[in-house]
Length: 111
Length: 116
Image (tube, rainbow over all chains, first blue to last red; front, top):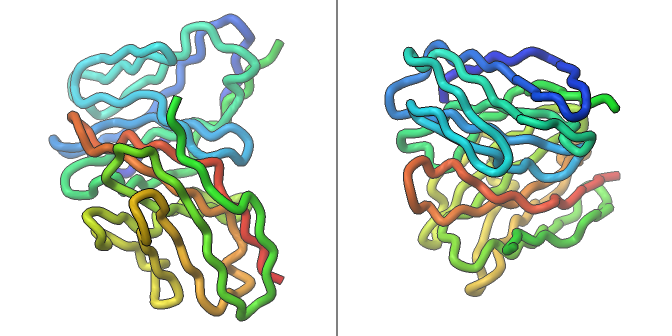
């Protein structure tokens, strides 16, 4: 898996959009960008993934730059329950489901 | 919504004992995984399992560890001769493997193993 770099921590006000950046400058053509989050010590929760195009689902939006070297996860209206560690992972090819988790970004949503 | 279930939620064992952690993956999923997270550290891949055999394993997954799918629903992780450093949260995960990008894993809530 390509190495990813994320800020250690970020803050966001409740109700505002949370924009979490990720750098993956060495990502290869067949690697997807995945976002997971982990609330306290619970199991990681899948959020969204993409290859080249921007993606949106009921949880979040994923914006991938044209050169695919970075991406941004957007939580459009953050709530207190979105406080978690967010992981950006580049994975694909033959590593079927083998995800390399980094330290992630600790997102704290404030009232 | 279907979910991955794990038992026990917490197990305390003496060093040197064997433990079995159990998982029931989502019913139509074909790929199964074990990950672990030592307190305060990263989530680490241990092993992937497909078609009744190990697909890939990490350096952590040595002879002390084994996995099994004894029936059509359970997926187990056995740890022999437990050591203090095996204390961690162990997460089971599964995926259908369908569709583009097969990294959409569904994780269980974890089994916390404490070795004394």
